[in-house]
Amino acid sequence: MLRPYDLLNNILIDIEKGIRKGVNSSILARKYSLSEGHIRRLFRFAFKQPIAGYIRSRMLAASLDELLKTDMNILDIALNYGYRYEQTYIRAFKDEFGILPGKLRKTKQIIKIKPPLHLISENKLDEGILFTPEIVMVPGFLIAGNSNIIPFKNSVTLAPKAAIKFWENDRKLINNIRNPNIYIGFTCNVNIEAENSEYISSVQVENFNDIPEGLRTYSFEGCLCARFRYIGQHHYYDLSSKRAHEMYEKIWMFGNDKNAKYAFYNGNL
Image (tube, rainbow, N blue to C red; front, side):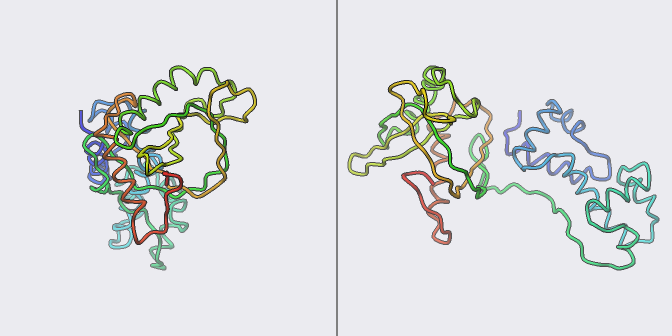
């Protein structure tokens, strides 16, 4: 099986090559021996948009060449790009560009198109992809979980072990979890002299009522954050020190970019 970076890169190439051949998620799924649902989920997670919408936008963008550079009638253009009826193409064109194809042909006005997507080679890890972060506003929230004092030198091995231990055991004791399928690992109280930090393996909770004794609680104020997304060919339980180090290294580089105005907060970006 292709690694995530190569698979996604090949899919983007296949879409561009197949624009006039009716490429779709079903065709791509068959080519790579994957389910159509998997292709759709992977594409949406990686590029934050549905694959069907992206293919449609790229087909309509490609059709501009024939619309603006030839005298081909609109029905023939529609047929070239997978539309069985002229009116279906015209409606899709208007939705995409805000103008009818016939009017664009006359006015030659500037329109905005969706360019081809590209993967950045710097995002490629040995067995996965770490995408350039989005800057998001995170509303205030509460967490509860286990507190772990972890030496810097062992963080990439001990943090995942603490996460698994919490997820399989103490998480089940918390009754008011807000997002039960989301794990939160929070590093705080960094002690440079002792060369360690506190790592809270946790989940988000509705409130601090009825939290089991011995669990650590922490509240976050709303703030701007950098959100990284990772795709890898492995279960979280198989997150090795090598894989974790690759991710942390790229995140650290982002946080220490002299041309950016980001800062690490208690050891977290």
